[in-house]
Length: 142
Image (tube, rainbow, N blue to C red; front, side, top):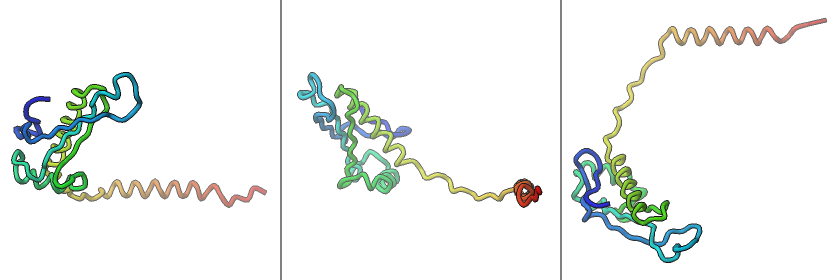
């Protein structure tokens, strides 16, 4: 990953605001496993960033509050054996998180009424089913 991280539209986070850290991945061992730092950890200081518009930053801080530690968003990736692929995965995950957290709220739902014909048909079918079941019982076959 090189260059700015594209969030949505023309808004991007410059690489200078991203902090990378690498460590050994957990999981099953194997040749070369104890010497490679393949887990990628990407940190982004959401509270102090100037890359996002103010409204987006506030919205993201509110929506991602449970994930933040002192205003810093941390994303880890260790699915791949290669550090480079884990870097790409972590960057994509951060971009996706920020894009969904900064998205505008959906339009409010306008409640609608059920049309009278549909409701009457439902009640008519319900009544027919009830009559069918009622007619099955209380028979004297003697």
